[in-house]
Image 1 (spheres, rainbow over the protein chains, first blue to last red):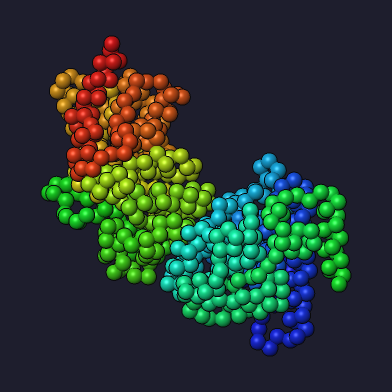
Image 2: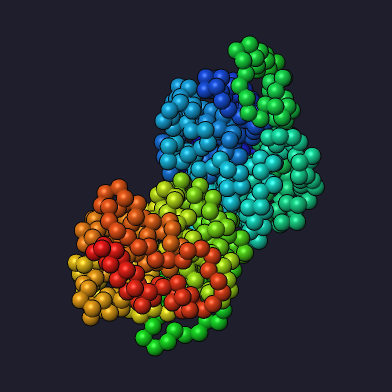
Length: 295
Length: 318
């Protein structure tokens, strides 16, 4: 199966520095495009979750434009890699990636939240090809991803399973039921990314129901743990490359991020969990993102 | 609860369930079983021995069990997710709604030891609300088989049906029902005994009691039609409409008297075929007591059903 549209050759030993530089540049450009596009989508809809979208964008861009073996013309191919957006409110990151990867026309992004749009406020697999399971309420997507990985384990299948969770989402008990089972079953083809932006809807995670020591908790459940800067495309590519090596443990990537990353006035602000920029704020954000691509 | 063998002439539907799942699994490697530390109570020990790689035991974690079932379906499997009906439904309600029904995942939820089978263990372990809860969820097919034959047929139909399903399986001993035309189809009820004075619509462990009640009523000159309505959702509306034409309907179920089979029939009749009705079931949390005692105490066995029919007919005639 080919990689998603626009991506480049998979990582291989002996990859040249130039190839690698191109991969990083490609993901960086796609992430920037996603940020601009999702903000436009939210502006047009008058609703959305820009804070969480922007903290997750770099992870999602790396997956869709460098890692996942998916084909928008065969969205249900049995051997496809699976990506589950467990933090289902972050549709901006998911829909912009799916559009960018060719699952639906980019213009459809402007139907977001309109009556009967297939771009529901939370991902719906029956509306939209490329969505693996419906999410929205927290604590669902990751356990479903564990089930997919078990199916692959039973079949000794080649596909890999990725799930992106919020950090606040880890306060749901079902997440740890799933983590325990994945560790027990040594699901080596499962990779979970925690979008560790340290903010949940109302306040900081550590002030609400603290998660630390988070890495130790995963290790105690039988997982390999990688911690990185979730906005560093090179680090993300490295981590996902390493995740493809055969192993006998599931892996969690704790991606340290900032809510609202990429837009100065949204960055690390709980108030932008959901919200809509004004026209002036939108123009400012786009200006910042365009400048970022020039730098 | 001990797993004592059913008395002679009576059957534990779990045996038919596991025998069928195992036979299906032998022919189709997509069939997998998912359990919550319930290999014993689901009677899946032989399945586990024969297909060790295809039994997923998630431990005591019902929410995860249902989500994992949805994930297995995504991976191309046909998962039969078995657990005590009380926990499978109540603890994992949102997972059933979101991961199975709303996602249209091909998951077969098998509620074992349903109803008041765990009578003495009290209302925490009674699963009388399950049909009402799941009936409120769109796209859920709900089947309540009445005997071993129908249990086996329901499981075969579940495997062949693409979509989420709840099959409610008792551990209470039941007889095999007499059938003249044994064809099972999802969404189709069957008339087991014809009559034109009143219709008794039952399912699960109450059907044989309904048949016994009809025999008693016949000796009194009352011709009762007995309908086995194994599929609660989607409801066999044509059969309900025909039942309403008798002028009186009694529904019987080993479940709550609101929101279940009786609720489904009443909703249909209110909109399309107004008729006098009595809905027999448990009015609320049931006390402790054996399953047999509870069924009798709450009027869900033949004498209670016959009494309800007489009373309803008296009301109709008055």
